[in-house]
Image 1: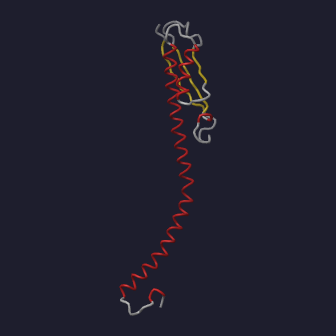
Image 2 (image 1 turned 90 degrees about the horizontal axis):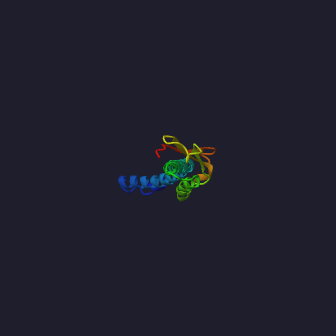
Length: 155
């Protein structure tokens, strides 16, 4: 006879209820231990996935920022009697507002201010991914993000 069958005079139904209660408590502690082990195994994978998602979204945001900056720079470069520092200032305003660092701006042709009408002007803005990441740069190390825009000079 076990400790949960201590009273043989007790109806069979209540003895079964006592057994279930006793087994249920033991299973509850086993379930908690299993949950802790599962959490310890799955949590690192989930954290890497979360950090990778955040970093990828950040890089997509930076990439779109470069496209916008290149577009605005190209648009400003088409204005008659504009200078290179004014184009750079328009691009850097956008980059500064969006906290992008280390940008390299290239305008082709270099003599866009004196280029003849119907010349294609290309503005290219690039940044290193390493200096512009949210978390420790592991996912995009060594990559460069580039945004370009090409427009035809009409004036």
